[in-house]
Structures are given as C-alpha cells and as structure tokens.
Image 1 (cartoon, rainbow, N blue to C red):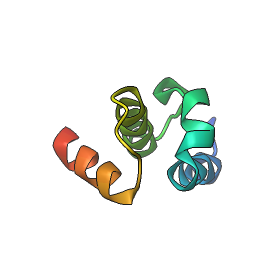
Image 2 (cartoon, rainbow, N blue to C red; image 1 turned 135 degrees about the horizontal axis):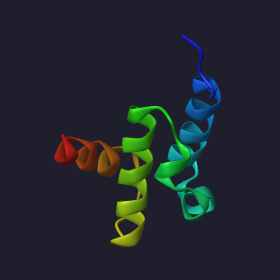
Image 3 (cartoon, one colour; image 1 turned 180 degrees about the vertical axis):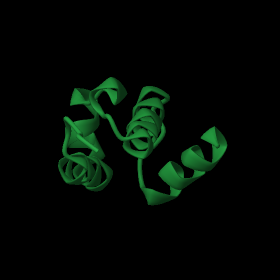
Length: 68
C-alpha cells in the first residue's frame, strides 16, 4: 500500500500533545492527521481544551470512551 504520510511521525506528534497539551494542542487540527485513531485523539484533546477541562491521561481516556 502506497501511503503519502508517516504514521510514526503522527504518533510522535500525538504523544507530545498528550504529554504537553498546554504547549501544543492550540496548534493542532484533527484534519492534519491521516490515521483515524490519531485524528480521534487530537479531536478529543481539542474538545477538552475548548471546554477548559484540564487535560491529562484520565480526562483524555474518559473523552475517548465518550466518543466511541
């Protein structure tokens, strides 16, 4: 399969966003991610930020379960 994107790079960006959400989430857009799982994670991070919910692994996990 010929992919025009690098999943490992997307994974690294998402990992940084999870570790440092206050420094990175404002610059992300879920449309920039090709992998559907990464897109879902970034979308959830953005929603948490917009609702002014503190972002950590617990709130992110809660939000991701809510989406599914």
